[in-house]
Amino acid sequence: MLYDVIVIGGGAAGIVAAISAARAGESVVICERMPRLGKKILATGNGRCNLLNDNLSEEYYNTAGRALVRSVFEKFGKKEILDFFKSLGLEVYSQDGRIFPATNQASSVMKVLEMELRRLSIPVELNFTCIGISFSNGRILVSSKEGETIECRKVVITGGGRTYPALGSDGSIYEIARQLGHTIVDPVPSAVPLVAKDPLCQVLQGQKIFASARSIIEGTEGSSAKGELLFTNYGFSGSCILDVSEEISIAINRQHRRDVYVAVDMVPFMDRGKLKDELVRRKKANLPSDEMLAGILPNKLCLALARILERDDLDSAVGVLKGMRFKVDGTRGWNEAEFTAGGVNVDEIQPVSLESKFKKGVFFAGEVLDVDGQRGGYNLAWAWASGWVAGLQSKISRD
Ligand SMILES: Cc1cc2nc3c(=O)[nH]c(=O)nc-3n(C[C@H](O)[C@H](O)[C@H](O)COP(=O)(O)OP(=O)(O)OC[C@H]3O[C@@H](n4cnc5c(N)ncnc54)[C@H](O)[C@@H]3O)c2cc1C
Image (cartoon, rainbow, N blue to C red):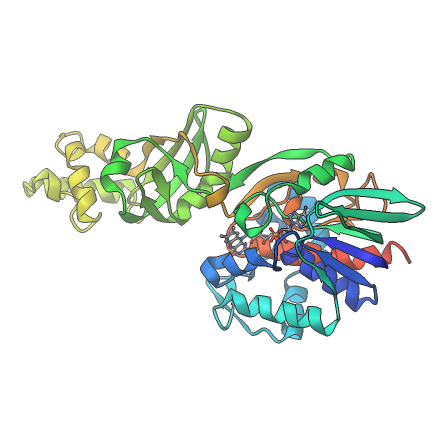
């Protein structure tokens, strides 16, 4: 059978691409290498699926991806994504700008998507690992590792990035993009815990604090983020670490820089002056050094940091507490990263249609592209929106 559209990859972007193409009257099939669709969707938001953010704008995405993101959100932005899920029957709510299904279950998101695939009678080829795309007499042939070949007029590639390979996207899709002439911006793990062989991490492992983290790469301060910080036996995790990890991961894994640090402000809720005044007051009251931070930091940290409060130079103690530097030795890698920084070079993609500039009839959407957003629903928002546009544009470009 000759399909109008083959969608390679049955994740967030692929499922929505198939729905938009089918709603536009196209015959469409999804080819997915795993035994079921949407495995990663089920794992998102710790099983709650943070599917969107109230403040959807290109500024929350990597610099290289922004023009493409703007172009896609102009066609299918926050309102359209909400309307889409409403049309599927999904109720949502917003918490601090993050939008979740009302059920707090990622499985509800998956369920309504699967119901729509069924309503539209969209066939799904599971255990179909695409290994090649070829072109013959105006037709596109998609071949699988399992020995099948399916024909179509248009193909939408939504094979994802490289994170959590056990959930399906293992980066093998980049090879297909390369075969088509595309360049790949070296993919590195993002939103990923950091490895730091600092004895303090060992001592404090399991301890959580509210902190602010900042990346420092070869002496240059990068972005910062506030939130939970977790000391672990290997280094650091927690939301503020994940939020600053991209710059660090790019510096270490892509640019092979060695002089990379994370600076931790352990008391972001007190400015330097206020902290100094409080320490002076406690010093005058002759508090022992291991009680100097009692009530400000957890007791375990009070003990671990007592040494720096033995000194009389409280300015330097404040400096350490407000910017303790830890050398970063690496990242925890693909099995612990939430998304991929890097992917198919966006300069090689038509911004209006998401069609390849090299191969007519080939479209890309989702994490396979060099587009990544901040944590908070931005990556799924990109997957839904780009999937919709690529699925729909595949028809428009033919008409
Ligand atoms: C643990 C975790 C939690 C996350 N939580 C959130 C969150 O709450 N909010 C948010 O916005 N983002 C979150 N993300 C990121 C978000 O899930 C992804 O950015 C998004 O799912 C990407 O969608 P996609 O369709 O592009 O790729 P994927 O969801 O990875 O789907 C790609 C699909 O393609 C298939 N595939 C790959 N290669 C082939 C091939 N050669 N042939 C056939 N099929 C192939 C894969 O098996 C997979 O099913 C999270 C990620 C992780 C890992």
